[in-house]
View 1 (spheres, rainbow, N blue to C red):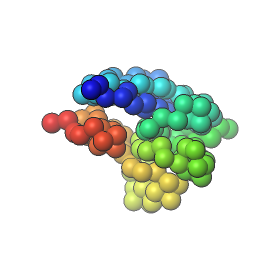
View 2: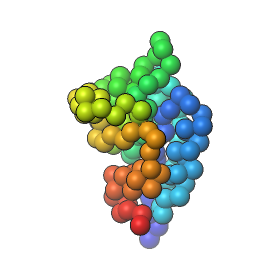
View 3: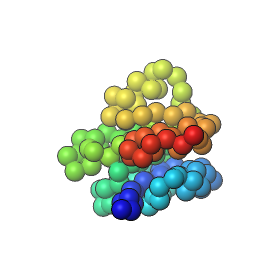
View 4: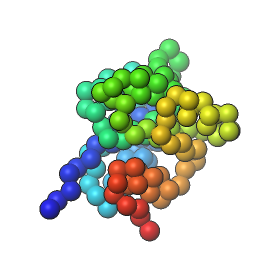
Length: 133
């Protein structure tokens, strides 16, 4: 029986980071439906409309818009979107930054630059797909 295609939403304001994340996820052993958003406002609307199983969310977004922490808090406060597994992916790597991410409701936290293999393993584990060697 074929596995159900899972949906992952990638959110980063830098196009080259979104592309790197997409290429990384396309290496998954299981096919993924990949959506992308360039800012927090788009991310929130897309997450509410599509209800992805997992979101890779950058914290820092363009000024004047929702940042990743705002999006995370809003999604985790809403019963419909609370189940989305959120991995914060950011350049902010201090313990305090991790604590702030956890307080916002993030399920996991990774620091840029990131290991594509580690990210893929985290995504597959979160989706219950096993890990890549």
